[in-house]
Image 1: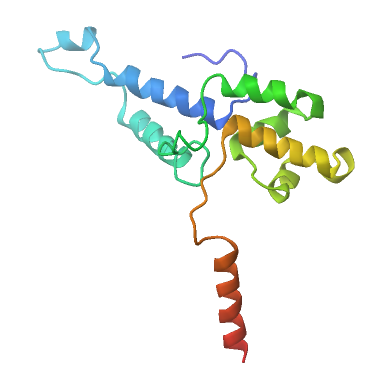
Image 2: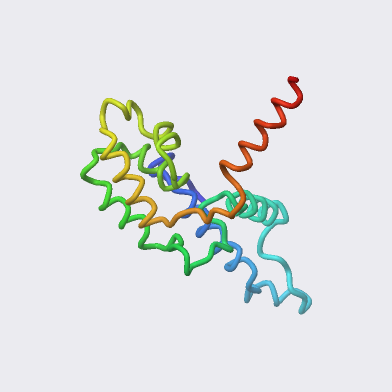
Length: 168
């Protein structure tokens, strides 16, 4: 393989994941030429490549990730090839940079605090109404993280009680 242009494009985590999955499928099929050697199946890839593919897929898919494969499709849409163009089209009026759009795709922000970390000078560039619109669009296009009952503010309050009990 020959690299023609370095860093000619930036990929989202979803694009990297789909590329790795297609590589895994492509290399898992027996090669026509490999079966000629002593009738045995010779591997068409190195063990190092399989390790890299496996570890990257495991890194990109754990539950907090938007790419988590067990996301309930009845609750919210999952990432698809059409997701990226749909989100870019929906967010075009907000004049976000390419880097900001990439981070939104990768992180799927679900609150103003996370969005503030992604969008540079958000307080100056976007009023509260636009911030909420962006979060709504992201939730509609990328889906929303499923929240388990009993987590969230209740857990925070219980933690506060523990701190107070230890202080007294």
